[in-house]
Structures are given as structure tokens and as C-alpha cells.
Image (cartoon, rainbow over all chains, first blue to last red; front, side):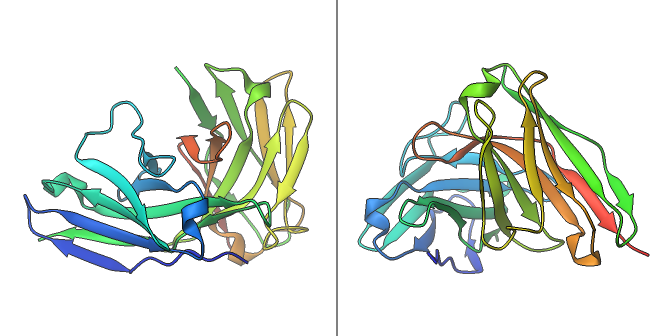
Length: 108
Length: 119
């Protein structure tokens, strides 16, 4: 089955740029979606279709892909960005939806 | 405004049955896939299955096939997730989600239903 790999944690100082990778075989052929989940809350979609932002999501959130890795980039990180972040794709070959294991972003 | 409103928290004993619900509003309920996502305490997100309320086409994650049943009543815009015999390991938060049109991201999430199974 298809697997998405994320690092368990990423740390960044306020005002700096956080990059959260999501690795998967042939991920370039899939649409990648990213979710933010703060403690005690439901997840929220922050990037869809690799690099699009839903309305209401700050421009500081962006997505990209290169090779077998998709990346969520958060510019000018704020304390309020501290959360768990998950990547997700639809694997058409198996017709399964897949989540990465999640990355905890810590703002130092 | 699109909303998914889930039923309230449940406390059950092992072996009991349970059906939780998710009511969609603010959009055409029969035109979008609805899914269910599990989050066990302190753990990540797991896709359980999806249903297309327009024709009740249903697909399950292999991890949940045979363990739960997903259904929908399009006349009242409600999707359901049910268990016939709960286990302690079913203790988790369950989210319903709406899938985007073609690339199947989850653009709207319910508030979650906490299910606790304990003797």
C-alpha cells in the first residue's frame, strides 16, 4: 500500500521559515493536501492540490513538490502556527486515501 | 455556509453496538463524497472509508473493511458510521469529512465525535 513519510517533529524560531516534508513514491503524479491540527481541535485544510490555499488561509502557508517529496512551507512563523501537520493524497492505483504520520511543529 | 455537524460523545461497553451521525448542510449533500477519519488518543489521522450519498457507493480502507459500516440517508442529509460490536480499541475521536471534487482532499471537517469504550 502507498506510504507517506513525515518527520515526527520540526522546530523553528518565531519569524523564521518552517519546511515540513512529506515523502512518497512518485508523489509528483498525485495531488497533495495539507492539514493543520491544533490541540483539541478538528484538522483544517491549509493547502490543497499541491499548492492552492483555501480562502481564509494566510499567504504565509504554501506548498510545493520536487522529486519524491512534497513540502509545506510556513513563512514568518508565529506562535499560533504551533500544531500538528498532516499530508494526504489519493492513491488512484489502489483507490485508497492515505495520510502521512504527521509532524509536530514547535515554535521555539 | 458548508457545515458538517456530528452527533455527541458516546460512552459504551465492549460488545455493544453504536451508530454515530454527521449532518451536512449548506451544499448539495448528494453531490460530494463524505468520509470518516479516526484519530486514536495521541495518534495520527486514519482514513476509514467514504460514501457517495447520491448513489450510496461505498469504499473502505482495508484496515476497517468488515469492522464498521458506513451508510447515508440522502433524504435528511446524514451520513452514519456504525459498529455492531465495539472493542476497547475503538476508543477514539471520529471525524466526518467532505471530499473535494476530483482530487479527494478533505475540505470540510465535522467537529468530531468522541467514542469511549470501557467496561
